[in-house]
Length: 294
Ligand SMILES: Nc1ncnc2c1ncn2[C@@H]1O[C@H](COP(=O)(O)OP(=O)(O)OP(=O)(O)O)[C@@H](O)[C@H]1O
Ligand SMILES: [Mg+2]
Image 1: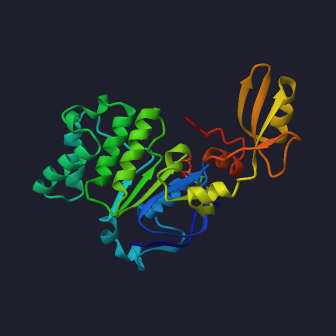
Image 2: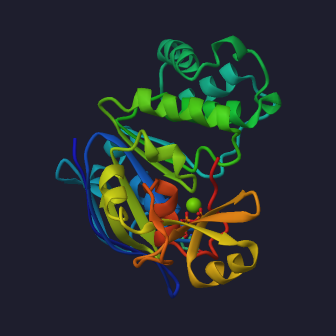
């Protein structure tokens, strides 16, 4: 399976949300990283076929997805960034309702609803009202609805926002499990969500695709740019104003700074092994206050 994104541009009035995106995707998990407004949701909506590009095309195995129309949509599972669930429905009833909207027969609905509830670990809670679920359980209902039609392409837009670490790990494992023989596209601000499960990481900045590499390749690219420096308290603000500082740890009366810099920031600075969080900070500006790590 091969999804080809060919010079996809999307404009809203004068705003260019996506600028000539070119990309090839095969099976596996792809992580999309980018600051607020970088175009993640716009790209995902186009790939989910709920929005058309202003110019450019998307092809699945060489066929234009606009021409494939419902034959393409049948292959898609989509969990939007902001999803509405019917709070007064039980998990089972909600999924059966969505299954009927997706055109599944009664027998298929029964079988698929039971199957996806099991897959997302909500079988025991199937009779409980969705409105009473925790954030993580609601996200799992969201994934379950996206899986009802056994999609070959699963698109999930910031599925882990607001989840606690335990639920995020659970969610990550779930995505990893279901990515066999499917394309899974996952956007996130939280770097640790994709560090271990993504085959490739796509970095969007101002509507442009600036990187498409494996997590290992991305990290190798900043190998000699992560430094550790120990300084006195009064020097901390100087370093913060001069460099991107990814972490500050107090060590008795001194401070250890983790600094991202192309050149050695201090005579005694030591090189450190980079992680994806360093990478995020390296590519995005400090004013992006959405950088979260857990
Ligand atoms: N329907 C729309 N009408 C006008 N502008 C839009 C619309 N949708 C998106 N935009 C603009 O396009 C740009 C990209 O938005 P998009 O939602 O794709 O970003 P994002 O990377 O998903 O951001 P976030 O991390 O906040 O979810 C933003 O500047 C946004 O304001
Ligand atoms: Mg978004």
